Amino acid sequence: MNKQDTAKGSEPMVQIKNLSKWYGDFQVLYNINVQINEGDCVVICGPSGSGKSTLLRCVNGLEDFREGDVIVEGVSVKEVSHNRGIYKLRSKIGMVFQHFELYPHLTALQNITLAPRKVSKVPGQETEKIAMELLERVGIPEQARKHPGEMSGGQQQRVAIARALAMKPDILLFDEPTSALDPEMIRDVLEVMVNLAKEGITMLVVTHEMGFARAVADGIIFMDEGKIVEQGDVESFFKNPASERAKDFVDRVLVHI
Amino acid sequence: MLRGILLTLQIGIISWIIALFAGILIGTFRTFPWRPLRVVGTAYVEIFRNIPLLVQLFFWYYAIPPLVGQWLNRMHNLGYYCAIFGLGIYTASRVAEHVRSGLNTVPTGQRFAGLSTGLSQLQLYRHVIIPYAIRVMIPPLTTEFLTVFKNSALAMTIGVLELTGMADRINARTWHGLESTTGAIAGYLIIGLSIITLMSLVESKLRIPGLIKR
Image 1 (cartoon, rainbow over the protein chains, first blue to last red):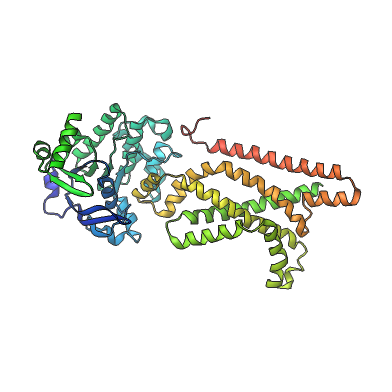
Image 2: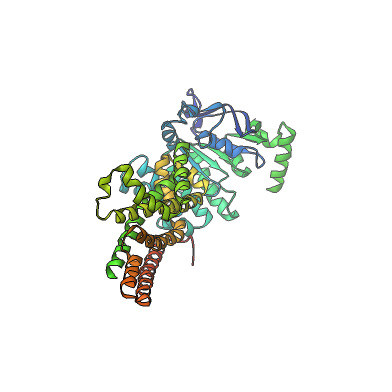
């Protein structure tokens, strides 16, 4: 794998620096520091309500934050968040959601082509060609003309991944992409994600799929109550987690599997 | 009588078009993530839906000409324009509320999804939120469409001889109250039922495959 080569020398793809966030008086993120190098796949895990999804949404500016900053490819999210720069930044960061969030009134193909047509102003025919290629890549070209309501959850999520890829992003954010799926469909979606990770696209993945983490992740972050409790190498996290809280979590997840 | 029906149709359709455009705009303002627009939208809705339509029509007809200039009074069909304008502006405030509730049914996740691909707020509304919300809004909007025609009867109070005004005049001249009011009733029923047919066609045309099965 060429991950090491592409990461060398250059500054990290994503830098989260001293990030703190409040909802009103309630602090949801405490002084978060994370670095993600180009080509890395980093998994974020932790109990629900620990701030994982919120952290993810801070990376592409869907949520604002009070303190600290996120630097994506040298661009400060804080700086561009109040001007049109944020749209440009977001178009370089694909995102996949727990509940797919496909546009229900559009077909699979139209879901994928909307952003390329409207944001990048690529002509319709060309975007359709790209969309078909993406659908083939996620294994469901036959669903192109169907609406989301006519597809299974696993198919919808794969269309959602194709939609995220359509803008040719440098980074992909996954927010519990398999949590709303049946066990059989989880495999289909994970397979697509594993392939993406192997292709070397930078990924930040909130998930409880520890099998996925062990197979492809370059690093793992364990969060609890808005703080990063542990951060580091995947195998050592599973073998001997440093904190009591992480030990407890790993025990439960591994028993579950 | 036929002239009355035609006039009612004219007033109803034109003021409906005004109401629809203004209503969608104002309703969108009320959900937009920028405060000044929300304030404008809220002020509009609260002013126009809290004053009786009849008073509003009187205002446009009696209070505006002295303010703007007497040349308005010399316009021979001032009542007609006032009725269309007043009815449109008033109905827009009601349409705006349906639009707002429709827009609010769109889950936050849809906004996140659209924005995450780089769409601007405007593009998000145009291509994701409004197309989805419009389908939720059709049944209440049908009701508003019907209400415009029924409310247009008030135009007779500012001297417009629409369907109700015509029926009233025929009754006054001929003492055929039964025939004239029945005629008006038939006229309104025909208009109303045609609209319902039209709107259910629109509804089935816009139905999203696989989303709602009936």
